[in-house]
Structure formats: structure tokens, C-alpha cells
Length: 144
Image 1: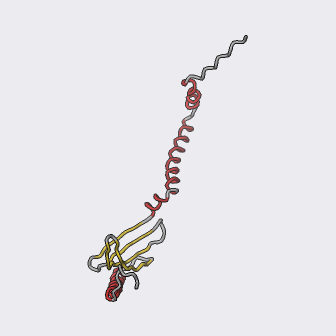
Image 2: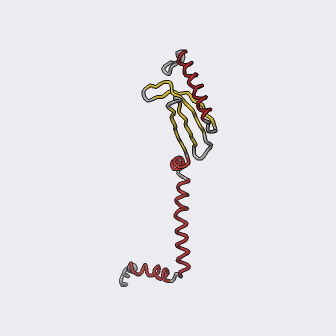
Image 3: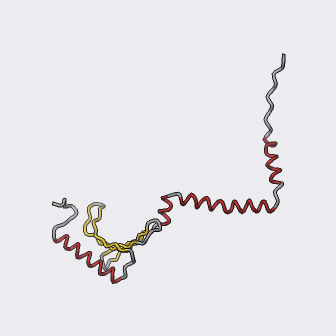
């Protein structure tokens, strides 16, 4: 009767790493510098690659929203740029509030308005609001 063969023991952990250790010891200084340079370049490239694929991060870092309120004119100037797109400027004035809702009229332009344009647009918007309110147009109207 043949005796059953005993299973061969796996290599001890120290023997597993001997091959890697010998490979590392065999690297020249030039090889080590090339590997380090690849690691230094690869990490930022990977981070940028991941950032460009993240819509929320793109919106956060490539979008602009600025709001400036003029107490003298009674209007608000808004500068908006979505995801690195074109700049948009808006001049608005509010005329009604219901809870957290704000009702306003606006002028939107693709260029930054000068101070004179801001003032004249603001006055025109106030005239529109006055006309709306004098005709009884209010946000709670149902259009009848």
C-alpha cells in the first residue's frame, strides 16, 4: 500500500518577499529616480482625472455667483457664471414676499453694466413694479 503523500507546505512569508527584496536591491539610482518621478507625476494626474469626472466638484470650482445689494438704488446686482461658461449679469428688484418666497423683476445682460446703466435699469424696474402694483397685480392673484 502506498502511503499518502503529505501536502507540501507553502513557502514561509519571509521567502515570499525575498524575490521582491532582491529586485529592489538590484535597482540602480537612475531606476529609483524614474520610479519616484512617475509616482510624483501620477498622483496629481489621477486627482485631476477624478476631479474632472465629478460634476459637483466642477460646479463648485468652475462656477461663480456674486450678489451686490445697493441700498441707495434699491436693486441687487448679480454676477453668475456656470461651469466656466459665459458671464451673465442681472439687475433685479423685489416687490413682494410670501413666507420665504421672493417676487422680483429683473434685467439680464451678458456684460457687466456700468454704474449709469445699473441706475437707469433699476429705475425702469421700479417703474414696472409700481405699474404692476397700481394695477392690482400681486403674487397671490390667480390671473383672473
